[in-house]
Image (cartoon, rainbow, N blue to C red; front, side):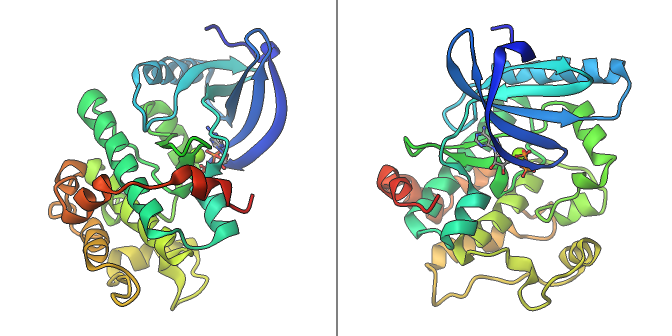
Length: 282
Ligand code: ADP
Ligand code: MG
């Protein structure tokens, strides 16, 4: 499929963030609905072409928990890529309108995200680098999929050079500028799960409205909150705690987490996602 800007009709804006804007579009020749992300990057044409080449790797990333990729192209010095449109949307929006998630749904999200991360790492040596609620998407069939992973080193660099590259979900080693590995994604998963369980971002409760720099210092230097044991099952609390191990050498990998009692329990559980999805406030 050779995607061109002229063939895409914009239907609705879905959101903006991390240096990009995402819209729901129709590909007119095939009448298919897609999500189009447009990224504005101040870079030399050669760098943009390299990013475009690197993005093509996404064609090879095929997994039920990875958002499908349809193609990427340049248009008026902006980079676009088109992907599967996930009609229920991202976890940040769902959480903002519906509050804390039910525990069985959190279990399915945990298993789905870890399967996606493990696939990317095992088969393509890709670490996600930007795991957070807005990059975890749900559709009305009840599937949970991840998107916006770091396939393009050049794109990651170009965004990192701007301030929007900073995120509340970054691990201590990432904040310190040390090596980034698959364990850094596990940290981001831990913060995300805590947020879904509590219905709010977990790190600015006691010390409300930190500046981003204060927040990053806090993550590196201060002990992290743990979930209240009386409100949540012990195996889940322990799972989140070990995701939030400060030392990267001691933090589990996605494959280690797949052996955890909480993961195994969640994997066996039957979750009626279609029912939950159909009752969400949109
Ligand atoms: P960020 O992830 O940093 O918030 P993005 O530009 O990647 O910013 O995405 C903006 C918003 O667009 C997301 O919060 C999400 O709601 C929506 N979005 C992104 N990709 C898709 C998709 N494939 N399907 C449906 N909605 C999407
Ligand atoms: Mg995103």
